[in-house]
Length: 437
Image (cartoon, rainbow, N blue to C red; front, side, top):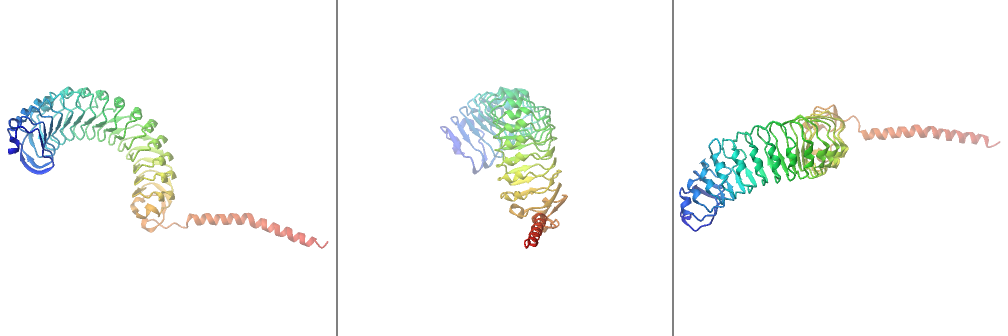
């Protein structure tokens, strides 16, 4: 504890060590000149945040994350007016029902980074969050048991780059003021109880790279204007109640890497423009009501590693163009109405580890080369008439289709050339009989 009596210390960095103990209750009086205090990721730092820390008036950086701290987050943190960085994430800290410590922190006009993630705050986001300085650029309150609406005043934080309120109990709709966060790059509101429409307000965020709204209760249509946010790299809208089709404008997202629309009520055909998502490595459209055929343009997605179309109403055949998806590792088109045969050209997909076409209407021979050597039989069950190797638990194919083709060719040639040959032989015979005359 003598370390904390060195009054001229400006920086203490003890993070990521096998240390235990508590913060000194008089830390504010013994370290009056401290500017940076880093004590995150310690093995057994317990106890509370002492109120006296408010006397460390020169403090700019305070990291107490990933410890075992308990008790209330002190309102006196608001006296640290020079604070730039505050990380209290991953502890067991709590607050009163109106999260009044947040109101006190709005006095910290230089605060740029604030993380409260994974603390059981059990309160409501106060309207006062709109009073944070525009200097705030990163705000994380993940899994804090927040159980209120998102106040419309959040739109005042016009310099926010990251806003993550995921995994809480947020209710109500996404505030329209979100459109004011013109510098926002990452918006995570997934795993909440948000309702209402997504709306066109998100389309005003022209610098946003990640929008994650999955596992809520959002309804109605997918806004067509999302295709105008060309900065998007990640779009997760899974496990909601969306019930529209996919607009062709989504094909404008040439840099999109992850698209997840699974577990909604989406309908209609997949637009051919889905083939424009050249940067995508994950697309999940499973558990919807998509119908008609799988567009052949999907074969142009050579960077795609994961594609799930399971549990839809797709018809038609598996496009042969899928053999061009050279990066594919996971392909699930089970539980559809797909007919025809499995293209032999898919044997070229050397990275394919998972291929599920069960519960469709497929027939013909199951490929056995390339990645199919290591696939399980249950990936092919409940189809119309698949055949092939016994390892797939299907009957053997009657005769190789190639043999039939050869046989038909031979018969066709015979039917054409044998009569011609007989005619020539007959003519020569007739000429031979006439020649002595």
